[in-house]
Length: 294
Image (cartoon, rainbow, N blue to C red):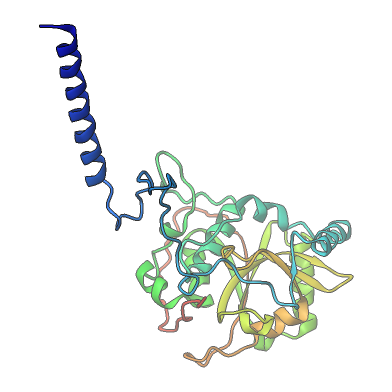
């Protein structure tokens, strides 16, 4: 057999292999597969997956004029002043545990897990692997997680859930607290007057000019010169941490929840020293806050 014949045979085999490869590549990448970026057009450009519709999703919300972004120049100045005034005692433990809620209606659970970890309370059960640590998914002893996903949780239920998990908690209805009294509570907690303790408010976002309704947030600091509080919002996919006037936060807590006809309020959490075995029976009320809307 001549060399020319051998070359023609090898070339024929190579062409056949190339045709088979091209056929396999075409069959593995259809035009309806959004993850397929390997195919090419006649111009050689890659096909990118389609982008989500702007009408069906959100990327955060702009803060209203009543709020000052924590990371803005003004927000940094408020932080620096509060630090000099001595009203940052609650901030750093919270900042170490600051998280983003896993579900739109998990603001209460996310806030509570943040508080429990900031108070360094041992859950007595593992989160993952060998680690004992609080996570939202572990806070299901009083109200089912499915129920909270759908309807939210009231601040009285949240207080009961905190007690079930080793924290002491005092609850105040905002309607029964004057602005001056609330300011004194804020100064006392953020100034470290209660030792390691943390303040959480349950409020109506609409009073702040924000979208949504009922929400929970820890208060991280207070600026006395401007009479503003630092709201450490766990819905960070929606709003960043921000400063708001203390009076605005107070008014937002005094709003009535439409479905229950009851007011909102605030809670103070602190460590509860356990002596022996403590058993807590949860008797959750039927009230709920509605899930937070976008």
